[in-house]
Image 1 (cartoon, helix red, strand yellow):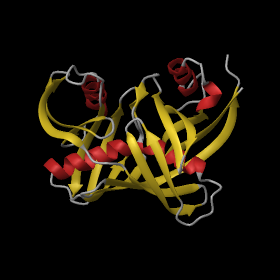
Image 2: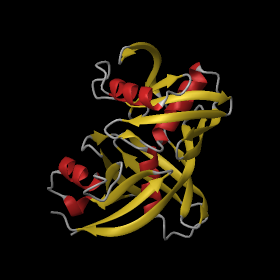
Image 3: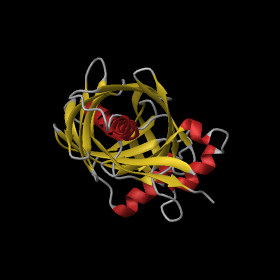
Image 4: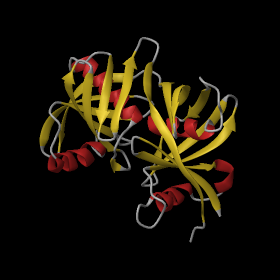
Length: 263
């Protein structure tokens, strides 16, 4: 039996297991089994964690079993899990990820939801490149934000175009390790609306790092402010692009704990 917890942020859901409990197992296969929405528990990803000074370390596997560097929503879900019994008004926690150290401060609690402001780092290799995907000539804003991100600015695609372009960009030969994909439209300087095609997952309700990447791209090339709401299908998060870091503010909640019997 494997003990696990499930948490989500804006519908972007993760399973959390202490790393020691699955030591020696084939973790890619475990992620696929647990995250399957028909025969498993169901989730966008599996996060294995262990205690560390002032917080925890984590390793993330996407639903397809591929290893990912970081997830903004996954980090926040882990913070919510580890701090759910902590009653301090402004509790802080540090999460060490393969995409860098993330520092989170809890700013509010409301019933089961905890809101955090997270310092997510700064973009690297920010640029706009021409790309042909699924037969379309595009201008794509690319960057590393702890993980690879590609943002297409302009009117949001309809469902057919979204499902055609998303996987074509994710697996494009320009991106050796694949890429997360956001489609973003600037509705006003303070509001950016997005759709997300997540590497190794497909469509997701929300993405923390994707929201940050979309704001960065929209501010750099689309006329958005550097402090704005980024609205995904699952809801709005605040992203602030400041000189020292990009800050992501939003909520997460722990849904339940359980035990996986396996097969």
